[in-house]
Image (tube, rainbow, N blue to C red; front, side, top):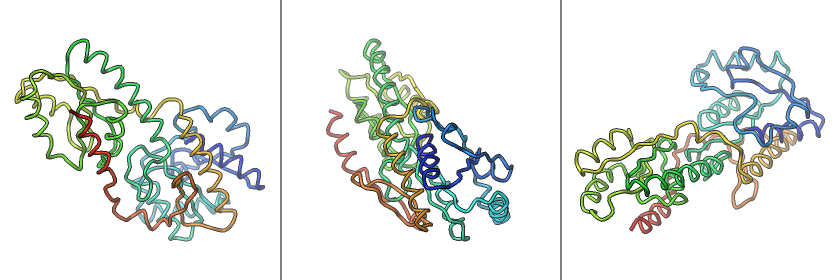
Length: 302
């Protein structure tokens, strides 16, 4: 997110705009945690993970009174347009505000693939690299001790991140929310494979509790498995080159759109080209887009 912030500040200033940052999401606006951002404020943030503005879960912001407060605060601070950076809920909030007349452009940043039309948002590539490095280390231990390891990764109800992590990490088994029923198949498989009792299993958080599945493996298949939940480590670390480039381009593009009077969109890359989607698209059901990846993972699991 810092790369987006940097691009917005520099592009905004280059076009003669004053740029302010709001700390802790929409809550920060209500709490008046607002500061002017200049070139010096963003000079060293490109290589830093996370966000200098912090973030928050803003589900209570969907209440009508909170939305009216947000509009009043925007007027108070003379903020004439918003660039919202975040995941599905942040984009949904941007949609609500745009419908209420707030000039708004949203920039997707999330490691789960729940945003319509966005195959990989800002943060996905960095998180994937972090997971890959962790799986490599886990495999060294698993091979040395012949111990199966279940690695739980994030992704909510989408299996795209887990599939990507499993493929780049060489996992023997990948379990995703779209195919929860295959938990039983995995147990049966491991009962029958006496010559290959240890493996790396990637399990998406949306499937269920990894520790419970580990207990089932021991009870039903006689396989003792370690459980590793990487959790928040997936969000940290130095941003990858791909994420920095994407974030920089999308941040600058968001400013360009607002300067040209366009509002009510979220921005993305499609085949490396900048593209906009109406924020109304955000409420549409995300199509399953990982069938080909899943087929490949099954082929490589032999």
